[in-house]
Length: 149
Image 1 (cartoon, one colour):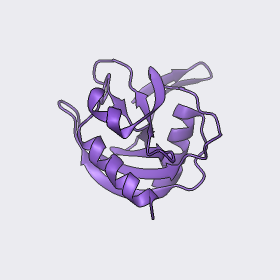
Image 2: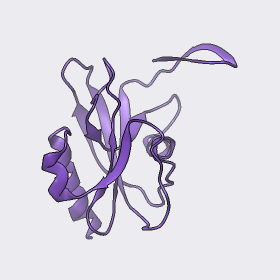
Image 3: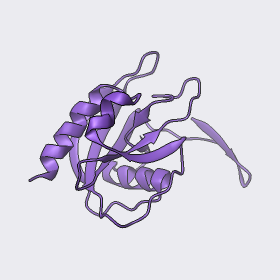
């Protein structure tokens, strides 16, 4: 991936195909989902997903999950729990190792859509009515179970 900033020349970030995502769940079992931008080549383009992003050099997965979630939502996770890792592969996309974490929403801190088109708490009943990768519903259900313990 390349990006340009005014204060530096082109910089290439190596992320080795590792991505971290966070499922922020509230007491009603709603989760905070991000509606991805519609861009050619963007993984999950135009779909609702758990916020997250790529691992940076010399970064561990917990740090990546916290950083990416904050960058995209402006919400600071308090107690991240690792849930699982999966080989995430979208059509015409290079497979990525996806590490999924979860945290309980504190019920009062604000969050802001910093990336993508929208950021909303969505109920489990609404999941079938929105455009999202189907396997995310199974992950959502696992987080509901884990959050009850």
